[in-house]
Image (cartoon, rainbow, N blue to C red; front, side, top):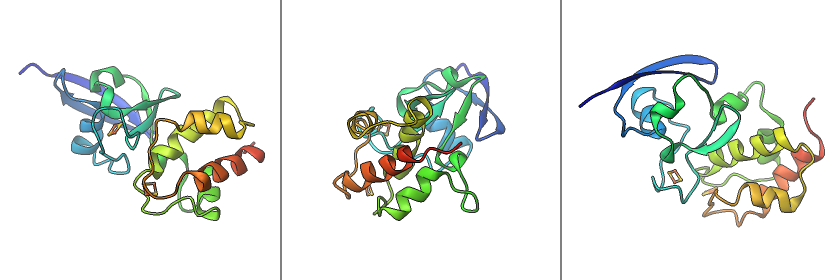
Length: 157
Ligand code: FES
Ligand code: FES
């Protein structure tokens, strides 16, 4: 099968892979580069657990072909902040108890990060719309929206 060479930057680290035209960004992140914080749920764009930031936009990695990421920057939940220097969103998720099993959390954080980058003072309705494609089976969403709203009320400089 014909393959293509791709190069990306994942959380600031250069990555390269040989991929087929059918490989998704999700396949390559998890199977080639061990980027396991990007979760695999439905593989058809329904659950949002695979959401990453691709050149500033929130995308479902399962619906993005790997070749579409060639030459672009990919940011995952791990790239937003670290345990030593968490992003305000990550701090607020912990403070508000917005993480239960945690399976949806990486996708929630990347969707929320893009929202606040574009709209730092997003209101509750805008937050709900931004995470409408991210399903959570545990929290009932209130705590997640509370956490994002708290981060929006006090955006990072
Ligand atoms: S795994 Fe991508 S949207 Fe569900
Ligand atoms: S915290 Fe479990 S799916 Fe959201």
